Image 1 (cartoon, each protein chain N blue to C red):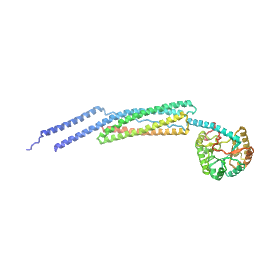
Image 2 (image 1 turned 30 degrees about the vertical axis):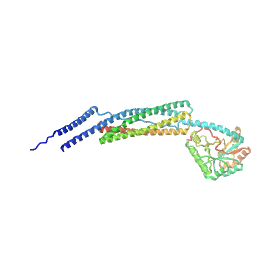
Image 3 (image 1 turned 120 degrees about the vertical axis):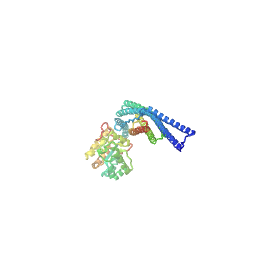
Image 4 (image 1 turned 90 degrees about the horizontal axis):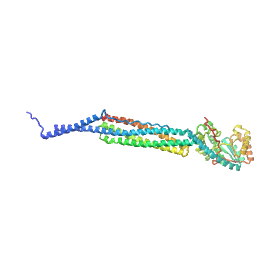
Length: 302
Length: 214
């Protein structure tokens, strides 16, 4: 006969204790689940975060009327200051009976001959030179420098379509030209003349950029028209123009070209200048430049 | 021996059940904190709308100003005054936005304490994802605030120079280019921020699902 095992009192206490704990825990859990069930009608509420909108329109300045008007104003103020300085310079030049001879487009195959003629008449001139020509005739450039002639820049391409193609194009060509001259002679010049003059294609923007890059833009007040007449007639025309300048009390700044026909008849012009007692001078970085004012005449080439 | 097994099973069950209870408790607390945080985020979103609104008005003033001639001094003065008003309004909204976002962040970041106590692996992983997104959003929006302050500072200098007639076209160009860079950068930042927000909403919901709150 098998004897059944019975739990003693201690065992009963332990089992009762454990069962009580279990009941408490289970009732707690059930209670909490019930609470949740009551509170979670139907489940919880969640607030999703919203996306932000951000619009930004890039600000334009480069082509704005405000910018253009600032440039115009600055250039006008500079022009007024330039006129005053030029008038002062003119007074000094008038006292000296000065005249400025300038030659564009060189150096060339006739530069040496041209320099010989100037030497012979003991006259000075300023040369606005093209970069590629300086590289082709370096000896002429070095001689100009050694003999004390004025060295100045005329760009690289001598093409209106190229040099006026963008606001930065004139600066780029002149900077290159400046470097070529500096490499050949060590001279750092600020003097520039734009091909065909600053009117009409040198816009306000281009003038502003050239000014910002410290270039002095030189035009002229006597056009010899040697490039057009290509004969002795240019001498007569120039003499007439010089006389006009003399009457108006302005110091002549004569535009000539470093070309064979000009050189051929140059002695006649120099004889006249000498006879009139003019003193030829060279342009320098310190002389206030004579520049054609825009006055609404400047426009882009395109 | 039998008694020992019974006790172990009962205790194990109790521990398991209390564990479940703890995760749900954490989830409840997390939800509460996230909702509080969301209320600050709402304020923050309102500030952003105000910023957007004033930024558009400021842009319109700038465009009008650019169409003027520098000699139109009275009109320019009027536009500069308007521009400064909108800059100040943006500065105010920006400061409020910073405060509200900081409050939202502090509240949401406090779920870290709860996350530590989560025992369910999946829930813990999801909560960790959520915390990372909370930090990512904070980091990127702080960059946005810095960029915005810089932009407004630069705009102030630009308008001051114009007002004081310190005309320097190159400097103006440079300032406007920088302003545009800041603006573009801020646009990119907000795009990234919105992506984080979208993920944040998804991860948060996913967590609640795992915690069986929804």
